[in-house]
Length: 304
Ligand code: C2E
Ligand code: MG
Ligand code: MG
Ligand code: MG
Image 1: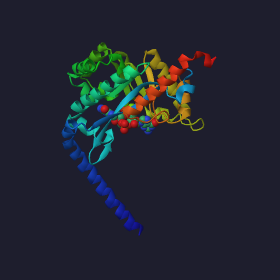
Image 2: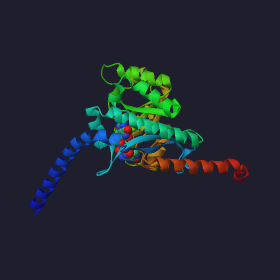
Image 3: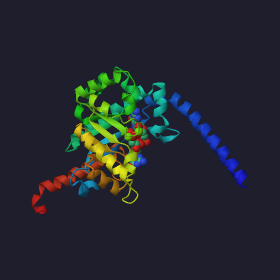
């Protein structure tokens, strides 16, 4: 019986694998139409400041920015996560129009939040390496900022280290052009690639996003690999020496947040604070929070 079950499972596995392959190909042919029909939506994950005293406010969410994360709302297949289509879109070059679309949506949304948030919220948008090899990227970003009216310093662009590898100097020119405009650059998933710190000095980078694996080691006091804490502390110190800020990703437990704060990490995002949320949900959080702080500032006697 076990054998039959095993066989059945294998057949299922094969079918699934087949479906995935078909889907991959099908998705790639469906993507242009999906762009035309506005099937891409952006969710936003809060980025929380970890500064002194943030502890008490953390649950309420001292949100300083959001990361824009694309989803494909497919009419038949439902909400598809980026891992299903970003890689494929990079291979086919479709990432270029898709990336532009995400940038437009995120900047337009951030501009709206700029109007209702007392301390303007930055939006951090992921860029594929392929996009930085497009000479027109700087102009594209400039045009989107002009059209939406978003301040350049409220836009951050996230790139993985692979975008800077190799010998091409187009990415470097593009990065400099973006930085000159006042847009901030972040290195995404720092610590999963080469993590070559030397090149950071030559690049107009503003933020390091510390990848999950480092943060995971901070899970509990007992399990912690003693090396992790020192590595994170060293990275944060080095980043600060280079005048970079550090955002930790994938923070899931209070212990991780506590240790990151102890290491002077500037900000964090993760399920502990909030999953990626819809634009409406972020707006709701902004309104609730600013209503809260209005109350505090308009009745100072109550606190005394
Ligand atoms: P990323 O940029 O490193 O984004 C962080 C991912 O971690 C997101 O997955 C997010 O939902 C997830 N995450 C957030 N908090 C936690 C946590 O506490 N624990 C864990 N385990 N995961 C957490 P998502 O949304 O599925 O995106 C996956 C990747 O797809 C992103 O990784 C990014 O590389 C790529 N991506 C997303 N949107 C875009 C886009 O518009 N353009 C490009 N080029 N890539 C994108
Ligand atoms: Mg990212
Ligand atoms: Mg990341
Ligand atoms: Mg990633």
